[in-house]
View 1: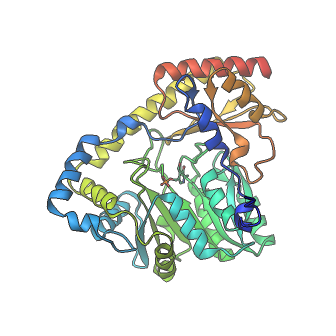
View 2: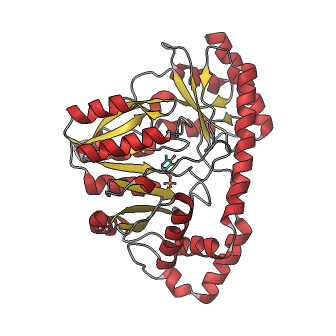
View 3: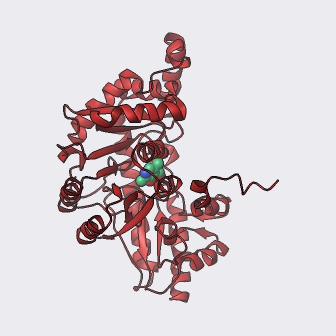
Length: 397
Ligand SMILES: Cc1ncc(COP(=O)(O)O)c(C=O)c1O
């Protein structure tokens, strides 16, 4: 059957993610993959989760297995609000919370509530492909603002806002950005907030990596500085607990909350209650901070090792970011080179990474940059893979 007539306009422009395609190759056991974006599996608190599941099914099975509330499981909401207040100074009298099925759904709901077809979304260039695709599926127009070492270029941001009145949303990942590893400075965060207020647009602050800092000074979240309700904050348990449980949360102004709740009801009624109960009990009875501290140590080690191997094996005309946390770094080759072509050659040598074009507003345009992930590979594989990549780069550049 010819399905093309039946596919909606909004899905026509969205292609299968380049990363998913690369995963097919990168997932082969003989490939050293720096292409993924997964948390280290050794960080999953499996024994604790076993105990918690038994406890839930012994003592509160009906709550776990029955329909729940769209806003989220009340004890989890309370624990998350307490935690973000302590850790990020987020939460004023006008803020509310809704538990969502992963940050991905948080971005999707935000788009569903705010965007008409043709409305504009400003994003960092490069930015996280998953959320760019979310905005694409709502037929939003993406405006990429280039990233400097300290975050979005504020002059370009203001110019873009000034000349495009269709813009409603600025999407930013200010801390240990995916894909670049860059952390936006306090000045850039303040500037983004000031411009959002000036031009009457919302900011979606996506912060799944914020707790994974292994060096440098903490920078306040944009939401913690928001007194006007312009910022929607998106936090996630994917990188600090488990992505498979699909748990994240939006903290947003009460004035827009109702639309988010109705939007969520229309999508999946509510987030999986069993998952919410597991995380709530873990936050309440176990020590998530010490578990996150272990992940931080591991990522610090793996990032440091990857960087020192890159220092040794990469040619000097390739530069790269030195992240203070998170799980990605970003390499830049000389202008005019194509990381997509390089990736095909790297895969032949059994090493995978993601070419920069995947993270751009125009994915067809070749990019001279690429993303490397360091969270899941062993020391041996990091050393071997970076050496192979270094040799390939030296031959080609
Ligand atoms: C910046 C960013 N936002 C959102 C997500 C989606 O995460 P979740 O598992 O919470 O849906 C990711 C996942 O890699 C991410 O890097």
